[in-house]
Image (tube, rainbow, N blue to C red):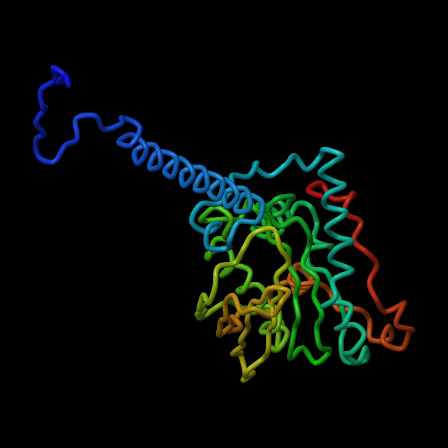
Amino acid sequence: MFRLPFRRVPTWSGVRPFASSASTSSPTSSRVLRTLRYASLAITAGTGVYTVGALYPPTLLTFISPRPAPPPPDPDLPETKAYVAALEEQLLQLPLLLEHRATENSEEWYETRPYISLPEERRVNNLTAGALRGPGRLALPPLVRARRDESENLIIVHVGRGLCGHDGIVHGGLLATLLDEALARVATQNLPEKIGVTANLTVNYRAPTRAEQFIVFRIKLLEAKGRKTRVQGRVEDLDGNLLADATATFVQPKYAKFLNKNVVLERIGERPAVEQSKRSPEEVLPRPVALSAQKTA
């Protein structure tokens, strides 16, 4: 018998000298493939979440990182006038307004639009009727539903994107201004000379007020005593969510009897003639505002 001329090859640390290279590379390849699968799933899920978030962003995210918006448009452009006209039509068809008209006794309520009869020379220097009026800001005159005894008002206002402090959120100072005017409407109508000035205004902000929506002011008389009135109000969205509330005190100046009351009536919205309450509901309802006739419409 012949012996093969091979010597025994020693092993070190349990390493087999003729181990296959495939056996050592297989676990590494599995880990790589598993990592790639996880990365692919993460990328797919992330892309899906980003897409959904971009199309339907959560409310909190829009507060933190609002979408940029263009500046208020030129009021003289045809498309801007069409936009304002569409807003007016939307206002007149709001379920809240239609329900209030249908359920409340028409004998006890009347409807008016402030600033409509305000002359141009007075309008241009008025804050809410002039500087803040226009598409992208206060695009429409407020719509007021008022009790005939002047104890309560419901006022609907549209606030645009050009009225923001934090982008997308209406400025708190603007809300205070609108509240002041809404409260003043009830307060001054309960003063002897129908003229008053704000002595005190306290506003509590309850939730952010989103721009590009209709908001509702609900105003009530608390007390009328001599030359002083106290009123309270709240601001809500169309779903009834509380955005802000306020109380205020108004006083009648001693020189009020020397002032022109008609100027105040032009600003707050004139009350229809009493005999209109005897007409049919279709005749009592005001006609839509002819916005195209206004420079800012």
